[in-house]
Image 1 (cartoon, helix red, strand yellow):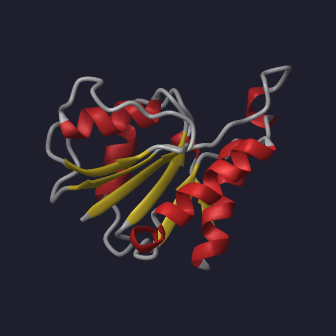
Image 2: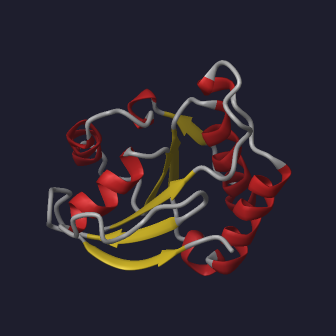
Length: 151
């Protein structure tokens, strides 16, 4: 099974409510670039889960429009959720693979590095997209197929 993990793109500076921060024009361009660079791989995605925060919903929506899929808001994808809660939810999914998660730091980095057992080796900048493969979604049980960073 493949799991794709995308960190939201560049957002407005923090001036108030973090959950309401929107993507910048640069952020929108970053997502479009990642979609173009990995169009073939993204075309296999069957479901998109995203944090309910505005910037992640906007990031996910750009991908969703290209794939013709809905974005499924998942409150467990906020940045400070323990990775094990996400892994537990993934274990319940049977028909949505490959699955794309759109979330925040530190969660995206914790998931990628924890699943691969790589101890922080794989940085997840804004609009970074990772593809992992595993039979079981547990710590140290996944392989990193590729990691694409926005330019």
